[in-house]
Length: 235
Image (tube, rainbow, N blue to C red; front, side, top):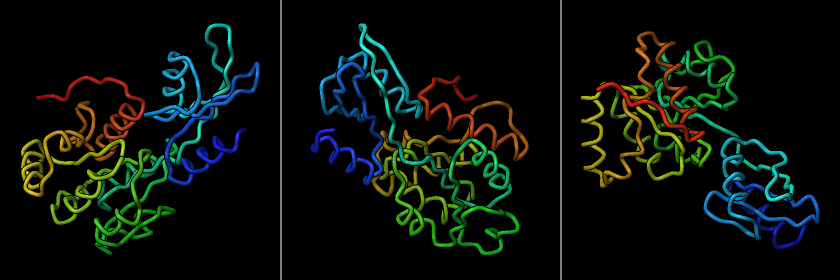
């Protein structure tokens, strides 16, 4: 590997920037493919497929025009930051862990965020905006607010909307979400930025119980991660 390419790869890894190292199997030529750029020369159809594989974290051999390429994905770990150690969180956290996510629960309320309620889970009892700044959400991070309390949810959302988080969602009714958007507009966020928020969180599957709501959120999050179109939420 050329020194310049190696340095670029290491810099991307250090910055937690998703990148794929693509090697031409016939001659050993190498390129780097990012979500928004390429270092090296590759046919456009190869770049498109590599980016899809990078999103899905699915390395391996691909072929185009009789040439075979090996794709090696370098992605930061998937994370979910949950704001609020509430009942839905107790169901969502183990589901997300099974799906391969590192899960962090943020809640300054000591009586909620306990090891008894969330065994083997990283708990952060800082105020949400301070916790979010320290956790530094990247493009492989999902952020879900579940407290229904603007004093906790809104500070987290202020940081989330300035980050590259791939999924931002908030629990609450449509009326609650409308009021939330009004508060965030007052803080200077435009409609395009606010459009990143999925609210109410989750796919419309008729969920009622905490477990069903958690399932709907994880399903929506997964669809966003893999850029899959889903049916619209109910009106």
